[in-house]
Length: 158
View 1 (tube, rainbow, N blue to C red):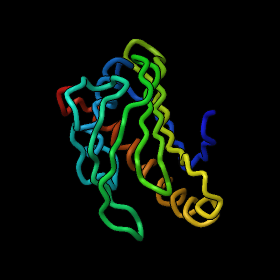
View 2: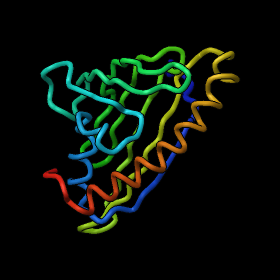
View 3: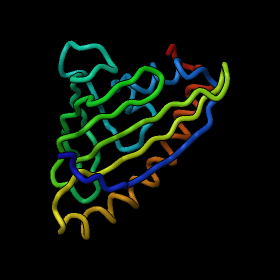
View 4: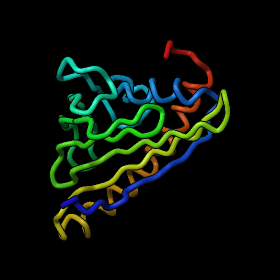
C-alpha cells in the first residue's frame, strides 16, 4: 500500500536549455546544494551512478527549529528526461522530492519541483506540516530560480 503523500511545496520554471541537460544536472544530487537553499552539503553514499534507483546520498540540511540535520536520501524513481524522485529519512516529516521534466522545444524545457511529506502522524500533519509548507515554499521559489539561472547561464559544465 502506497503511503499518503501530503504536498508541501510546488514550483515550476520554464528553462532555456535542452531537457537532457536539465535532467543530467538536476538528478546529480551532489549538485543539489548548489541550487537549493537550506542544503548545506550532500555527497554520494554508495557507488551507484546518479539518477539510478537505489542510489544513496548523505545530505546535511538546515531544518527550522531543529538546526543542522543529516538525512539519508535514496533515489526511488528515475525515468530519463522525464521524472526523478527521492525519499529522505527525516522523521517525522519523511520527505519525498519529485522533479518532472518536459521538453518544450529543442533548447527549452519545463521543470516542476515538488516536495511531499510521507508522514502518517496526524499530530505532525497539524503542527509540523504547516511550518514545513511555509519554509519550503520560499526555498522552492529561490531554488528553482537558481536552477534556471545555472542552467541558462551554463556557468557550470553540466
